[in-house]
Length: 378
Image (cartoon, rainbow, N blue to C red; front, side):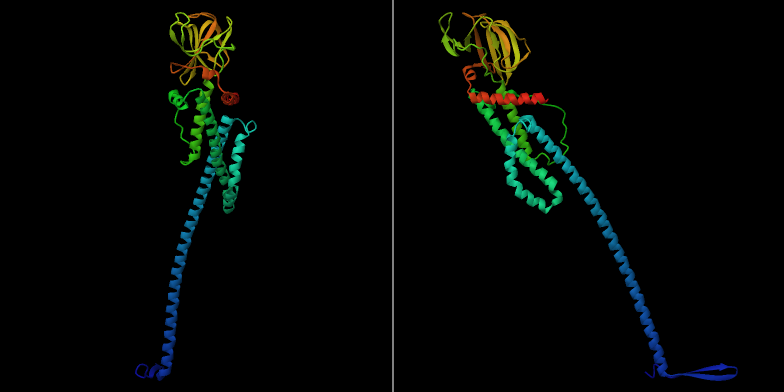
């Protein structure tokens, strides 16, 4: 230590006088300690300032990043709200569409409560589950209620439509006709511009697709049922000659009789057995004066031996409309009506149409009332 800090003497000359200043080893050591301490403190302060500056920069970067994240989250929330609003609008539009479907095919809720009765049980069964879901996310309650309402409405309406279509199909079979064959032969024309669905890609759910298919089937079957000629072509209470093989009244030979004969008075009104369009008015060999009415799906009725006409080609007629007058024209032995029913040009037995069971006629009347109600509402 003495070698490092020996005592030192400093000589000072001033005004011809010489003075000396002695610096002891202790003073030197104290000075060195003070200077070292100051340097260490300055270095520590400098390092602290540098570290603090880096920390501040890092915090600023983190704050900036958090700000960006908050802004991004805000944008996502805004987009989410917009998407929720769009979804709500789509759901509402879809529900309105299904409500209109229900009213179109089954009438208003006031006039037909069967649909509400069908839908109510399903709503009651799912009420607990639905409330539980809503309690978990109260803000989603309106959309969830609407989505559940739509799903169960579609399911219950599909079930009701299928039962009604099955009744119509059974009624058609009772006439000896095959509903599936009628569907294949109908070849209904369809068309129009393509207008994409405005909702999201999943808007047409399986329930709605099944409902659309069931409604199309019911619509076709009920229209086909209404077109089946089950009304009597005249008020005559009896038939003089039945469908099938018989002895020809002119030559006595075995012959095939393609229709049923109704006796009556000359000029008696002849009525259309079902709604349709008059396809032919005129004479046919052996039949005399004839009116033919086309009912769709390959069904046609022929009214022969008429004394006069009360309809024209292309005229639309309803069941029970007068289309001609009874007579004895053509190959006839007396005043009567020869009535035929033909399917795709082939004669079939009219008796099954004229002797339809009451429950079948009731199904026809229900279908007729529905179409009439739809027509009145425009």
